Image (cartoon, rainbow, N blue to C red):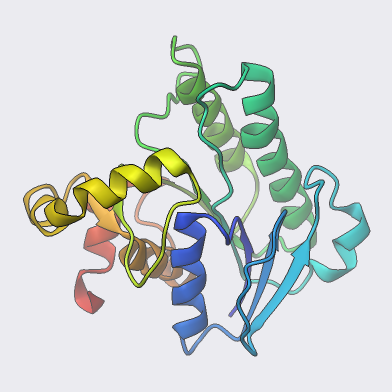
Length: 224
């Protein structure tokens, strides 16, 4: 399996990249983002592009892939709706529409967030934009298109968030992680399970179009 990964430097993307590199059936990973991962692996190739809205200069490198895991995202705090939409909707759809044209048999998994608004009419800006992005992705003619809505994500194996506020919160709550994970499996997953869950979807398809933490935990229960 050959995989394209967007957002490999974020907390979720780091976890997905780790599991892809460890998986015996993943032969190649192409990480595309605005920053390099700093990792070195025989499976890994990277393309660093400041402008992810225009992928035409690298289209020749985007064919022959079986799956795309789209983990790129930003926190909405302090952003206007126009700027948040540019990163969340425009960049996602630029990647998805290019990839489905070049790889119609591909599985595309979009990592969204718990609370995304599928109606696209709610008052919460980030939820409305996320919901619009989800709906647009699910309409594209991929072999499989799926949306992941994680809530609490516990970072494992030295993975950290790039957002200072989130990083501080994770540091303060670290002693509670084992308790939260066991007490609230319907809301809490780990970076390891999330990465393995995305790979399971690429291998076998998604049980439903939109999956939450409980679904990811169920998908990966046999290899936890």
